[in-house]
Length: 62
Image 1 (cartoon, rainbow, N blue to C red):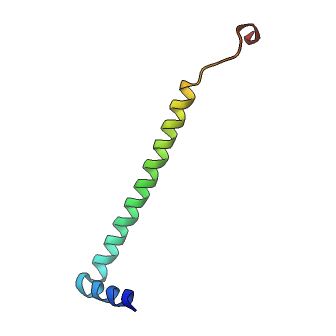
Image 2 (spheres, rainbow, N blue to C red; image 1 turned 90 degrees about the vertical axis):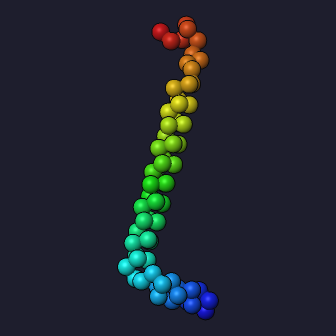
Image 3 (cartoon, helix red, strand yellow; image 1 turned 120 degrees about the horizontal axis):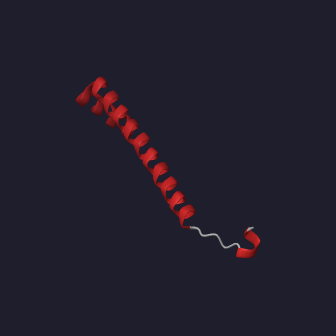
């Protein structure tokens, strides 16, 4: 019941259009955050792969 009252007050104060645009901006922010996290983890994995060294003995490489 309290959440419904809060929702009604917000709707009255900001109007339907303003709330919809704010939710759109929140969605864009979440998408950008997920993209940043994905790129960051890919960077870390690449750095770890580049840092890995070949431990194969010299006689077995040929």
